[in-house]
Length: 210
Image (cartoon, rainbow, N blue to C red):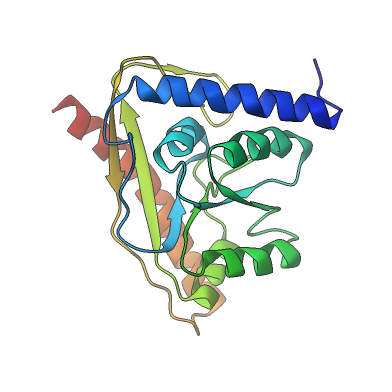
């Protein structure tokens, strides 16, 4: 069924947020409530949205959600989980969204899924690095692993952690971008962060198995 009416989005958002709270309450490990060291921009793979929804809930965390119709469902869910939502792209066609993101970043943890909503999987865009430079905030990767998951065949290989699984999170070291960094330097940092996202995912899996 395609969602078209506002009440349908609100209903799905309410049900979705309840299901995430119930599912997350059964997990064991480091996502019951992630403790993060400082305000900054935290990069998480689009596939790990369920982890981030539970791990960052109820603390006023800012999150960038696509302005596409599909993003309305996530907006409704995440608002009920206590997120401050910024609609639009942090990297494409988004001067208005970029300005709102900059305002939201101040004093907050800000979550971005750099490869959402359409991919390519794990790709970090240069525009996000330029935003971090303007906001003078560190960039960090956050990756997750779970002992039992259902992984979908979608472009992002979306992860559904199963009930009562063990979950492990890995927080990357901060990367600070000079405010006057040129586009070439920002592109280097974007490529490095893309690699770090995948490397951290492997680290989380290894640490979980250990």
